[in-house]
Image 1 (spheres, rainbow, N blue to C red):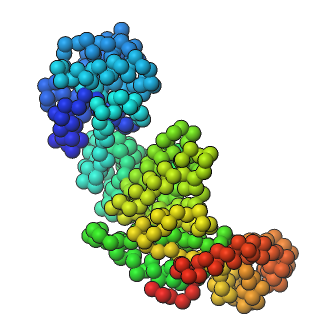
Image 2 (cartoon, one colour):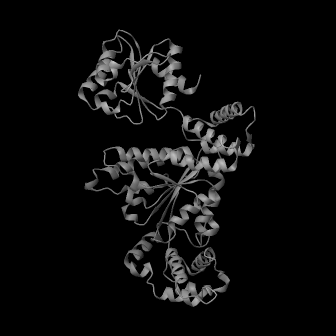
Image 3 (tube, helix red, strand yellow):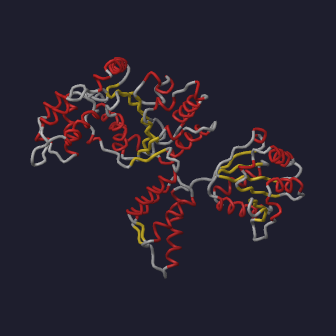
Length: 496
């Protein structure tokens, strides 16, 4: 017996009159209840607005007159037959008082005549008067063992269709495919496996990458959470010596699956705009060697009450399913800010996030970045919810040299040809983003005849630009003063 079948049987035996199942795997739900009905010798029916009511254990003609939502509920209420009734996509009719009353009367009559109502849809919000009569059930996602079973089944199916030619696959490719299919539904996993095998009868590294991209799209079709493929290594990031040393010391503990307690949980990166916080967040994932997920708070917000928090919970669930991974929340203060105009959404978002941060057991390393510490509540940044608060300050002269070298090299220029000391001195007060833009602007300016960029051109671009530290001098100085005694500097000599 599968775990889902076992759990559903226990639920049916617990005398719960209404079961809510939010799932896109409608065929799988029907299959489970058909098997369960046979096992329990209990009649099971399925209703849709298009076909009406029909038995699901065996083929039987639909009762078309019962296609109306009100009629099917009256029929179930008046029947003298116990049974299981699956109502598919009934969610549009749950806000009608007549339907709510009929559902309530059927549920209240359960003790005299057990008629279990199973509401199945992609999303279900039930009326308050029905909540104490109902329970939610979620299909389990397949584990590694189940996914490998699905791979064997689909390989066998393909082999039977091509005159017994076996599927070609290396152990490494199968293991990677299995890892990348964790966290999605069984139906989606089976479809992706079938697509990987179908075109060439093999499971290759190319198939693994294709499946990975398809999985990302399945997990967050609304764009609430994105997956960063380009997780730059720390070798591409100038400075951040303290942060690098801190991550290095915790890498093994974070990646060790046998470690059940006290694994690293996350950090907050505070700093000036353009100082390199976002690049540092990407570099953390690259250093750990795990996927990088990014939450877009702008995509979270929904005009309907409660939907924004639900969107956040789904995003956090996705991160849990992708563990081990790094979850990056950029400019977190903007997402949790609350005001009179947002009807408390910011406070509810904060509450949802705090609960997840405190209770999660998965290896999801949180990297939150912020520009304005004054907008962050104390409960968010206390130890226990995050491990450390780092301040990404304006880069020192030595770090500015590294930044120039990195951006010149990335654009086909040999750093040794330039006077990096002069560039570092001329760029005092510039952020990493400002230095990068100076390099880009210089490439558009006059160059020598052979197309090689000159130090003088770069110095000219720096001289014609006011750095952010001058434009926003008051705000940046206030931030640096606050951070001096309260945070760990991300740059500078190693302290860990």
